Image (tube, rainbow, N blue to C red; front, top):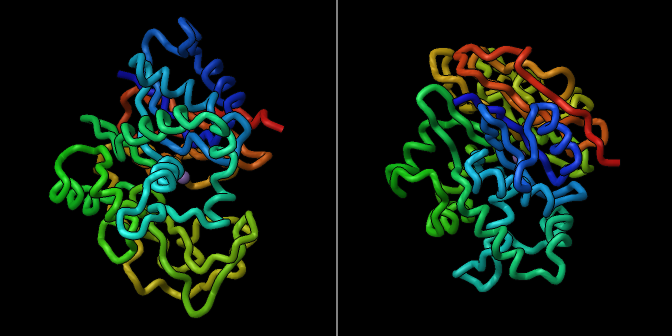
Length: 311
Ligand SMILES: [Mn+2]
C-alpha cells in the first residue's frame, strides 16, 4: 500500500481539504478517498484552529471507511485526560487549570451544548493507536523510543491502544508510564542547564527544551534545541551531560513523525526519518504531507504542502 502521511492539523479544516484536493483525493459519499492510496494522519487534529469538528468528522469518516489510518497526538491524549475523572481525588486526570483550559478552549467551545458529541469524539480518540508499525514503515506522533514501546507492550500487552490503567498511570509524573507517553507523544525533553530559560511563541517561560533526539551530532544544548530561532541566543552552548538521544540508526525502517513545528522548506531529518508538522497553527505556517511509495530512503521531493488558508 502507498500512503500519504499527513501532519498536524489543529482545527484547520479548509487547509486540510485543500491538501487532500492537491493529493487527488475525491469526496465520494461524503468521504475523501483515493483509488490507489490511503492517508495516515499523525495526530494533533484538534485545539487552536477554527474548525475542530469538521477536521474530526473528515478524518473519522476516512478512517471508518478504510481510506485512512491515524495515530494519537499529544493533543488527543490531553483531550482524553481532560475528560477523564481522576479516581484518586475527584478532579480530572488533566487538571482544569486556567492554562490547560485556555489551551483547549477552541475544542471545548466546539462542543458547547453537545455533550453526546463530546463523549463520542473522546471515545474515538481512545481508538487511535499510539503508534503504527508496518513491515517497512513506522508512524508515531513525536518519538519512536523502542525502549518505551517495549516496556508498554511488556506490562500492558501488545496492543498499541491506550488502556484506562495506562492512561491513569501516565497522568502521575512519579510513574514510569508518565515519561514513556511523554516521550512517544511529546518527544524527548530535557531540563535546560543552570537556570536557563526561554519564552515560547505563546509567551510562556520554558525551563525544559525539546531535543533533536535523532541527531547524534547534537551534543550541546544549543545544537540539540528544537524551538523558536529567536530563543537560540538564550540556550547554552554547554555540552549536555544527561542522556538526551533516542537511538534510531539509519538501518531502521523509515519513520514519519509530526509535532515539531518545523519551518521553511520540508526535508527529511535523517535518511530514514521525516517530520510532517510545518506549523499549521501559526498564521504563516503550512500543512504538510509525505507521499510514501515504499521507499526506505526518504526524499525531500516527496513532500506536498499547502500554505495555511485560515485567516
Ligand atoms: Mn503535537
